[in-house]
Amino acid sequence: MDKARELHEALKGVGRFGLQATIIAAEVISVDGESCKVKVKDLELSDVRLKATINGEANKILALPKVGSTVLIGSLTGDMRDLCVLRIDEVERLQYEQEGLKIEVDSITKKVSIENDSVSLKSLFDDLADIIKTLKLFTANGPTNGLLPDSLLKVTEFESNYNLLLK
Image 1 (tube, one colour):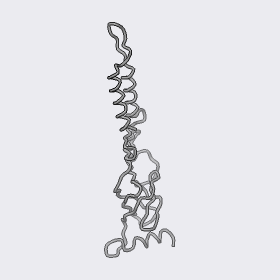
Image 2: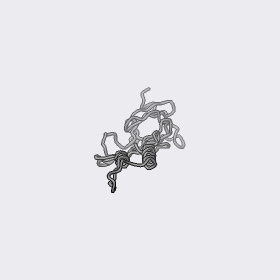
Image 3: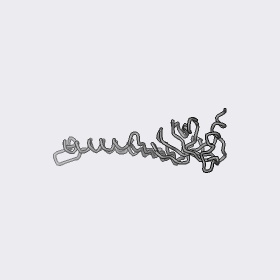
């Protein structure tokens, strides 16, 4: 039996009163780019879209489901090639890209990335920490030799903390 027929058979009786369901629950097996592989009963389906079209375009909002979680999938045409994720129970990563602005929230690394075509938030904080660490001031006795140990400790703490949050 071909996959389309297997899917049709798997969908029979899922809906109310034995009607064919067009929206069904599935388990996420893997995620690859803008698509994922899911399992409906014992049937594995690949190339299920995570957004309306898989086109590699940079402008997008993409929610990547956690492997092993449940998603709702459906097809407006009834064709297996048109399967799309409609709802996600557990999101592992969010990606937003629009006109060069990129924002990513990653629950695995527990970090956030914000950047555009020119700079990232992490690189700005890295630069700020370097500026503060090497800061020298002119005094009546000449230039200072850098930060006092307690100030340097605070800058190092600041650097450690933002590295825990930013990618």
